[in-house]
Amino acid sequence: MTETIRIETRGSVGLITLDRPEALNALNDAVMREVVAAAETFEADASVGAIVITGSDKAFAAGADIKAMAALTYTDVSADDPLADWDRLLAIRIPVIAAVSGYALGGGCELAMMCDTVFASETAKFGQPEILLGIIPGIGGTQRLTRAVGKAVAMDLVLTGRTIDADEALRIGLVARVLPADSLLEETIAVAEQIAQRSRLANAAAKRAVNAAFELPLVDGLAAERAEFLDLFATEDRAEGMAAFIEKRPANFRHR
Ligand code: HXC
Image (cartoon, rainbow, N blue to C red; front, side, top):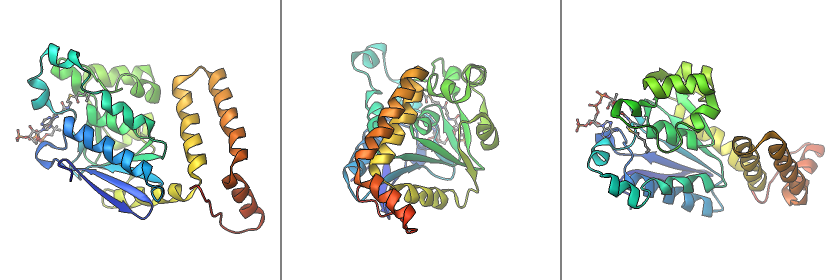
């Protein structure tokens, strides 16, 4: 039983819905634990090929829980890293899409950026307002945002703490698609379902290769991509995918 999220399966898609309406889905330890555990459980389920993380119409997540953070001392936060478990989300091999409506602020924006891609509704609002609290982003906001949108825009957002709308988020490359609010979730799940029908092995390779572009110099990233590309020739799914094309039929990937 989960306290802060709802978990369900839609076809081959695992759906995680942040559910702390009284705090606009603010992220506390329980949310972190439950989201990470749910994602790991979905990954271990061979019938689930992709994950969607969403919130409510009003808020994807309004950031880390400020009321919980306010009570923490330096000793509390330095004795053990209270945010470390979020990193486990990065190890999930199946694709993860954030479907964002309403506020995605601070840690909420960072959680969206930890996903493989972000689809936003027209009502979505993104920002890194930590500076207004006397802190800075702590789960990748200064790093992933900068890689996603470049230094000038990242500095603008991180130093002013201003909130941007979905169109601006699309323009700067923070989100991949802007969709109508009333169809955001269904359209995102439909895309996730398409992805889930593809080869699980190719999806994992694609994730590793694209993520290598974040981590590695170009020459090393290109080498990583080439190795992933060549490795996929060892898979039955590669043979099936190419045979299906030639035989003019849909592919039936076994390790999807
Ligand atoms: C705890 C929060 C919260 C938060 C909202 N609430 N955001 N509680 N932590 N981050 C609570 C409010 O206290 C309130 O509860 C209820 O949710 C509704 O919020 P309102 O403020 O009344 O709603 P509204 O007027 O519509 O304003 C929405 C809002 C505003 C603009 C999103 O709530 C806001 O600015 N929230 C904080 C955003 C923020 O600074 N985020 C960054 C946090 S730092 P009560 O019971 O009081 O009515 C961070 C660091 C990341 O994320 C580090 C790594 C995780």
